[in-house]
Image (cartoon, rainbow, N blue to C red; front, side):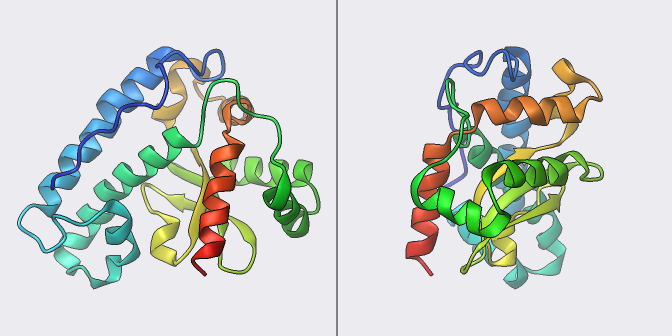
Amino acid sequence: MPFELPPLPYDYAALEPHIDEQTMRIHHDKHHQTYVDKANAALAGTEWADSSPEEILQRLDTISPEKRTAIRNHVGGVANHTFFWESMGPGKGGEPSGDLAAAIEQAFGDFDSFKQQLTDVSVNHFGSGWGWLVYNGATLELLSTINQDSPLSLGMHPLLACDVWEHAYYLKYQNRRPDYVGAWWNVVDWGKVTERFTSARSHV
């Protein structure tokens, strides 16, 4: 079946004042919709037309070269944005607990060190892309990807994503990407990240 634009899991204004309502409306209704439309066009008539975004991204190297770039870009845009919306929520932020907190401490020293390192990965990423916390099958690590590339294509399990395309923050923050990333921490849904971590470890 063709992809459809999923509804936001909360109201457009729910992440105020950290992420503004107008940005959320444009980002979700315009940008994400465009990725859905272009992904469907790229997949039409292919053997992947009924596959999930995640399945496609995990097997990008098996897609014909003439189709691969469009599918990577647009299917990646579909998957990454859905993942991003679900990574946030009103009244969230704070710190994780339990096994995820312990894994962060083991990999990065402590939560503050992790937070600074992911902030640096996201803020210092050149051009458009994403900052990620991923599980590599053994431990947690950080990485950044360009454009709409996904850690799924690298065999990683994504746990948390920070969108650093300018359309994610420019209306409110203009060129102040560090201010946007700093505000974004206030809406991270650690419950969802913990769910992903638990699931990732169960599939190794």
